[in-house]
Image (cartoon, rainbow, N blue to C red; front, side, top):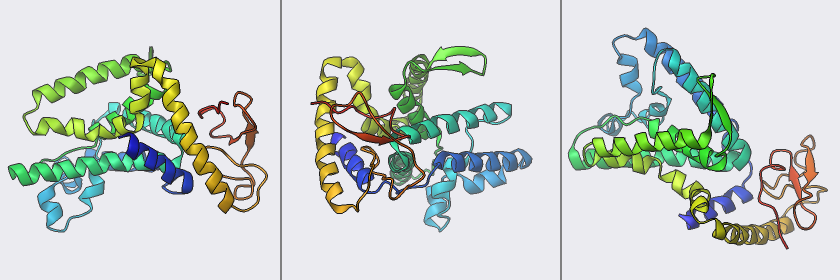
Length: 281
């Protein structure tokens, strides 16, 4: 998992423009559109046409590989709250990780879900209609791991920290695994596997805090080597972000600042000045 995460970091470092900017906005808009049409389609024909179905996909209905992620997990007024929450955590993760890393994270969750959906079909012969529920749940777990003490208003009324919400959802997650029949009960684990790949270090750092600085130091060293090699290939610039690699030459309107907490003279763009790992001696 660490190997894959580092490869993703390296890819994102070399290709900062990869991916769809503000991806979660488009996903939520798609959810809203499907929600509106689904509310009007009492027979459920429209939703059935978009849902994941290996049997129909193998017969040529390939759009189901993507559209299943646009089907809301709840209906009525409650769905609007979830749409806002999806966008909030998705946009926050993209701002912290960068567009490339967040896109890889989201589509990795979709890919793992699709692969296991086909595995279930080939093993059991049943075309299970998997949803994107656990993909969004993995996003929530990642958000809670990165911002455990962030306080939000549950239903816009009750103040609660993200870590407590994550614990409640984790309990529900475990109950789902226990109650679902085998091998369908493995789907939640597969769908949130990208959470362990991308945020496993943050999660385990709370269990073993003494090793946290050592892991970060190793990752920083790797990134520093790649940064030096990358700078040799880039054109002249005055300022360059240490995280995403954007420069004032490529983005003249982007604001850059220098971090006073980093050892040495290191510059960051406005998107990463408050969300980066500090350089040490």
